[in-house]
Image (cartoon, rainbow, N blue to C red; front, side):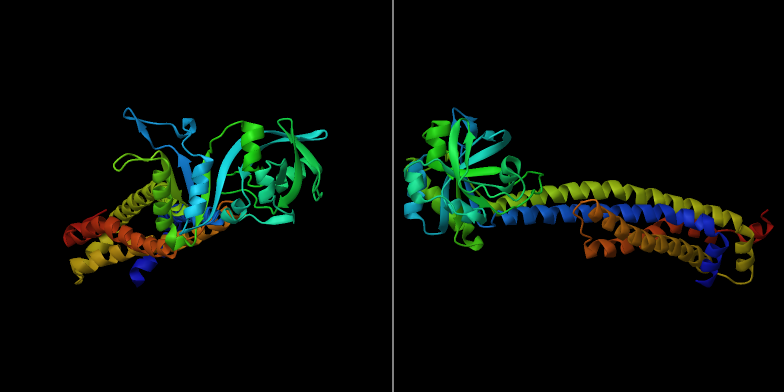
Length: 399
């Protein structure tokens, strides 16, 4: 160990250059893992904010003539389906029909583009929205298709100015006037960069009759009584809709029911795949670094051939010579790994500062130590064996 440390100390700059590849490789792997894990957690948190027990029912998945139908062109969900789920629910706590339309909303000389969601008051509980000022519209407003709405904070800011109170004001959407009865608390941007506060929520009957002139629903939002009952709630909704749509046993559903848990698992799987690709790409730099260490160790063996011959002539065994160079290789590799972990930690802090979600998993540090040790052993073995197999007489004579 002393001999190996002394040899490294005698060639500080060369040893540092050997470590540099390991430092960069380990730091890159850790930063990629941190970004992958942080992004995955950010997506899960974003989905959780929507409600982990939320269920989405969409038209589609039906087959016609062997061709899967486009959900956007299907009109299989009706108000009667919403009413049937509402009347027969057991594992479903809240349910809201949904129709949407996008366009320009105007107030005085100000305007902005937004999306109007036609819902019921239960939608706020399903999507975990909170009223900031005013109140949500009533069931009576739904029955009368009243032209009332609640708006997000982006609408307030764009049409009325920061901190304004728009309660009671009338805005126009597609020439239809809507009176604001409430505002929503801000949610900000989600993981996909969408402004969650840029929306208007109105009675679904109003949107269907006055804005869209249609008699079918685009989707239905619901929530299970608890996250662990999501599967039962999906089965319950599917059974109700199959009966309502008179779908015979063995026939495909003409609707799709999805839970947030399924979405979360899908997104997690996607993020894991992306993280793996990033880590593999960064891992190639470790391979290059290992080759660099082997190259430097071969040069070191050549430079110290006479020293090796002298040691062997006074009794050093091949194992001793091999261990000397192997320990030197491992020290360089592990030292580079430690510095790489520190650099990766600093890089993760930098990612946080510029807005990237990043979280270093503890196992990535453990894996880095193991990988660095393996690199030191694997890429130091060949130079060490070469040194051990030198002929002492020829080595002493080497110039």
